[in-house]
Length: 208
Image 1 (cartoon, rainbow, N blue to C red):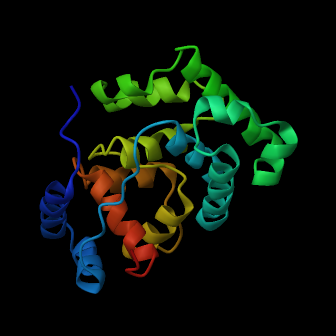
Image 2 (cartoon, rainbow, N blue to C red; image 1 turned 45 degrees about the vertical axis):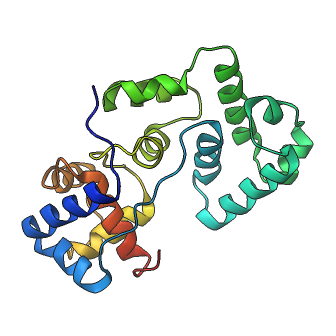
């Protein structure tokens, strides 16, 4: 079974462990304090929002998500599939993301993907289940595990804000290579999800 889910208490305990272990993370906490316990509810709406966030700013994705919510009267697989191409384009979906959203909605309705079952799976298996869908890559699956399933030890790859913050936190001359990225994360096991929240907090300048 997966490790205990992160909550406010575990987050603070993990921050304590990390700042004793790594002076660079301790400096982040000195500047900004502990990060918020950012999380999202598990389910279809959160995955749709993550799809919207792929390769765009969080603010534009949030605006598109809010327009979708208004257009559907509540984001569900059924309500999403009722919208046509033109309606989804007006909301802010590209042709590609429209396809991804429909694949996801149809997979939930036909039972080929059971989001409720992910909670009982280990990280790697849950990630593989999500990535079996077209449009859900490693980044999207990791963000879902970290934010919605609140797994404590997820280290997202190719997150531009996270890479920027870690580069600054560790005083690197250039963004880390994939091998360097994994090595940096290894030092923060089993609390890499908390290290990620600390890095995002640094990226935001301490703004929640």
